[in-house]
Amino acid sequence: MSLSLTFLGANHTVTGSSTLFEANGKRVLVDCGMVQERDLQSRNFDPFPVPPASLHAVLLTHAHLDHCGLLPKLVKDGFAGRIYATRATTEIAKIVLLDSAKVQAEDLAFKEKRHTREGRSSPHPYAPLYTAQDVEKTMLAFTPLDFLERFSPAPGISGQFHVAGHILGAAMIRLEAGAGDEARTVLFSGDVGRWNMPLMRDPTLFTQADYVICESTYGDRDHEPDTATDDSLARIIRETVEAGGNIVIPSFAVERTQDLLYRLSALLRDRKIAPIRVFVDSPMAIAVTDVFRRFKNLMDEATLDRISRGDLPCEFPGLTMTRTADESKAINGLIESSIIIAGSGMCTAGRIKHHLRNNLGRPESTILFVGYQAKNTLGRTLQGGAKETRLFGETVLVKARIASLGGMSGHADRGELVRWLTMLKQTPRLLFAIHGETESSEAFARYVEEKLRWKTKVPEYKETVQLT
Image 1 (cartoon, rainbow, N blue to C red):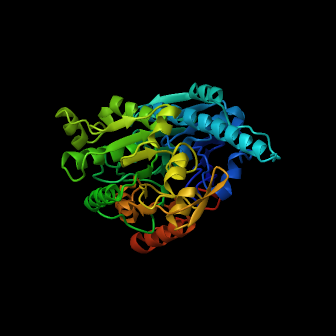
Image 2 (cartoon, rainbow, N blue to C red):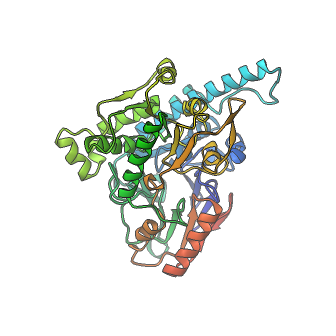
Image 3 (cartoon, rainbow, N blue to C red):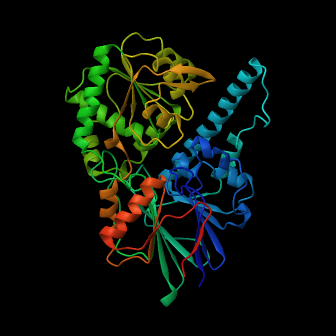
């Protein structure tokens, strides 16, 4: 039997997740994500490393853009197979991809207008990677599945989705190929969630796998305790309100925004912060929150208990959902301090850039990061202490307070990843560390080798590894 893995994204980086699994000539792609690091974004426009028409299927771990964002381009370029995902992921992916198509069109139109005003021209056509029509066509290829439902993405390969705990609908994927002595199990971690976090169930634990492809976003560190995170969030809000500024939070529309609303609801209920206007300025986040309400069965017991008592975790007095551009612009005319939650989470596109332009120059405001910021993104630049940055072709001075809450991450930290791995009763033949910056992936691989005595590998981009 011939088995191999080819690593086509999120190798020494944290975005653009994509891994090719081949078994006896059958090709299955796990994730097809968009690259968000500025210095690597050209990969989004490059031809796919393997012909899309040669793929039998795509398996989607979850609906974050860095895992699903290039699916419409894949279909547009010739992929004609099925896309397998959980039911919640299927619904959220449509929202995320339609928003991506819209943001691409808006950003390109703004860029073309600015270039025309400045008397410049672009050597490349002002064309998006894909359109809303491409997204609609892509959604026709989806096959929604329940967790634990067995499926066969290609002859000789079977699979199951298991709860990952990262975001609503997020899955770990267990693939089996071959029979008898040649049977092999390959486990894709997806993005591993955390234990005892708001809303989400805990990650699934496994007892056997021959090969493990494991994320390593936080493979070189541990998060602060969750209680400390809530205390820090409350303190930052109180201090910023006292100074007369806004709390601007770049947030991923899927899960991170809902997590924030959950925490803010609790802080207001327990009177740890005074009543304050909270804006969710993201049509995508609003739509995803509606999906959360429909998939209550996927939430953890604590959340279900709150809901049963009439305490809705994503609703509270003072919360405003802004859907239109005019509603978004009106926020900047308010005098009183507000919490503004907007996407994208790494400040690469969307409405957050407008709120940054209006608040970065205000010493009384706080820009609060609550999720991972990849290298060479605007978010990482600000997090790194930049004194100025470029927004919409203009230089903006950074005078606002920059703060981060690492404990709100939806990714497991080093200790949690090891907790997940050590439930395997037999040592895997090989563990691959992906979805992490070089320092993080290599540190995690070393840690696993030293602590668990496992064989590990940090694969290179486009590297193929034979599994038999």
